[in-house]
Image 1: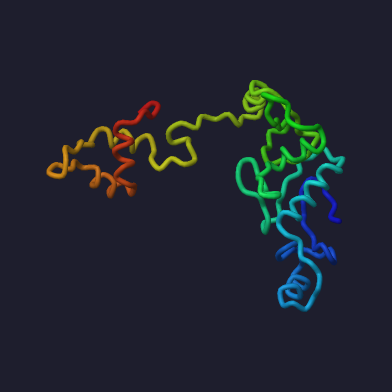
Image 2: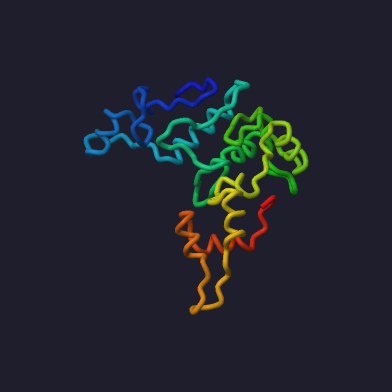
Length: 203
């Protein structure tokens, strides 16, 4: 079984070698399983995640514990995995196994400010106000409006340019200039129309 020392380094579930190529196995054992020359059962993605969570629950470290092996790394702000047809957040799973079921109206709280951390010492059930307080404390409550949004396609200067030069169409005989501005800025025409009448802050 691999040791946890703050970062999870996945080793081959058979021989303990690194790196892992796939299904929790090193290159040698993975190829044997793939070619049918071995009766060893390779670990599934769910089994690998459950093994990691079990190690997190048993750990005594005060450092953040998160999945770092790239082959089966959970994605997203709150990493999750699928178990028996249901998706669970990794931290949520650890909390339910250590503290108990989530009380009504409470949320999962990361005292360390790292949403990917699965260390039970850093997790608890808390109110929404306490969670917001943690965001202020750790500086993770940044403004996500306008160009600060990670999904934003336009900057605030581009939005101002659009509102200055946009001409609204009146039908097929007078389509306006949304298509022209869209080609100029490299975005879709509907985004130009949305920006022209939208509510961006400070735009």
